[in-house]
Image (cartoon, rainbow, N blue to C red; front, side, top):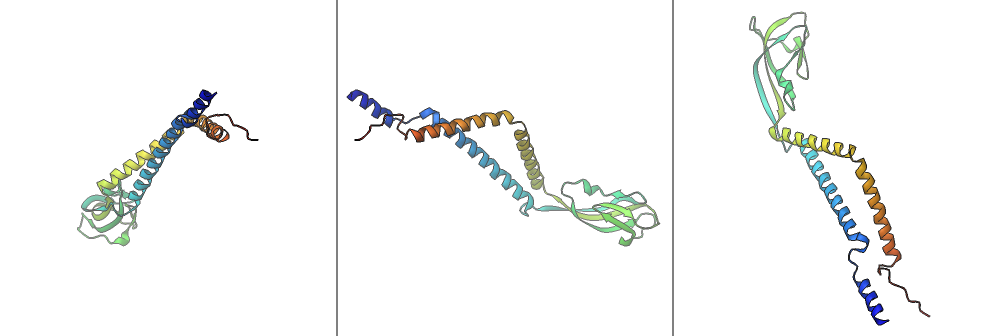
Length: 193
């Protein structure tokens, strides 16, 4: 009888890997850590994208050849990543060298439209604009790749959700078994009189 009691005490003291609970807990801890790390990275990249830590670069274009006719003319700088803060400094008619006043054209995000009946077939346009620095371009590319990767991952993860749901159910059952057994490893309870 004494050897049975000693064996029960050894079992009660040895709680390693009860129903694989430690492995399941480690698995969920790793998944949680990866998710948390991913979230922090996305937040940092999003913050970098919208702050002034990564400065804009300034470009000055002098004498770009274009037209001011009935067809709108798009400035070449519009295609640069982060094109913003356009300021047209001067438009010169190449036919007679006259400066065209700002009232004779409209500018909508780098697209020039003639606002008069006079057509200017050949003009030289000088302007300045801001654009993304290489650091901003790289940050935007990384953020876009992370966003695409996360959305692709979650759109293709249906089987993994099913497996995770089963693992959560198993984890809950194991925890309930441990709580019900009082953490004693299934030892018998002695009644007191």
